[in-house]
Length: 264
Length: 262
Image (cartoon, rainbow over all chains, first blue to last red; front, side, top):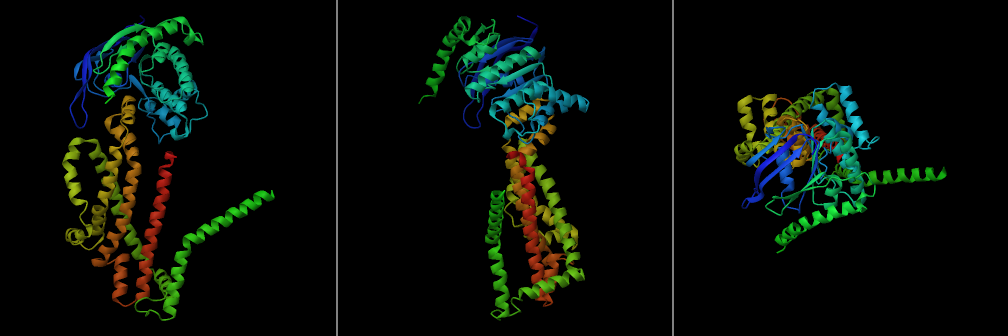
């Protein structure tokens, strides 16, 4: 494994409290260690609490039981050391692409020219040159997510938290965005925690995949998924398909449990 | 070439037709009014002819009466409304952002919202006298709550992912409220302002009619009491047109401010 422990999740349990009704145990005693510059996927059926775990690491929800350390310090709230990308893009609809990407930079002490150069560099990196002055409502889903990625990278967080970022995209765009994300990660080398329910996506992107059980979410297994992925047709190679099969057998059981629970 | 000319002509003809349909009722009303009084179908005491009203309007403008009183009224509405928008908007935003403020202030808002604000006319006069202060306070009090409720509902609907995004990019809580909650609330907040704008005209004219020494409402009462009915109708029409123009202007402003919604 490369680098030092960057994020430590220790025996974290969490209740989901709906506005009405009883609290539901969403996470049960979850422990996970993520190394610096590592790409880890959280894989599990919908409703297993994988997004909740991500929000806890992001500091958007308070840690109730257990502890979460980022660079040795307990998480006390959201901060610019952890950038986040959501499935629904969460772009500021009243800001242009450029203004969205500039937002995090404007919160830092930095000369204006440097700020704008940085924003432009990340807009170029995600291939959105020429769309700086467009509003999110004028962009396709893929372009919106590129903007969100540029925005989360521009202020240079050490960690990138991604909550099913490609879940709302069509199949072709999704596959393209996955390759681009991998290229961007290789260039910027952030620690990435990537939530998904798509087995192939997890195998393709991550170095390690943490498989979560159906609710209450626990870490069922952590699988190493590092192998040569530079091949364009890696998805059709034997090692890739073997990994997918291995993970599928772990997830299948949980997905069935989640499905049965939802049936009347 | 000829084709574009033809289509241009067709388009301008369509525009004229649209304008005609839209304003035809007004023209018919004006013509009907004028004929009715010319043919003595109504007495000029009840309804002076439109042409007489227009002549009176020109007189009132050239004598300066309409201008002076108009500016007095404009000053009162603008000040009262500005206060209502700032205070009411802030109140709604902060109520939506803090459970404590919400719990403390919601009963008050719900109590005062349905109250007819014209009932406050004597109260504001008692507090601030006959001048501008009492009108501004009345308009402020009467227009604040529609803005508050619009801001509150809009702010409550802000997407938590946008809130989290701003926070994760280093925005403080207050900064986030300004950058995310306020623009999220804007469409509904502006609708509240539009309601407030209409209310402000009602409160302005009724308070000036009852107790004032200046303003358009005062002028209506003064001219009516003195038997100058042409002049009275001229001021009433002015108020109606000013209200219409203000609403049209505000709608255009809303479209501009919400351009990002596409």
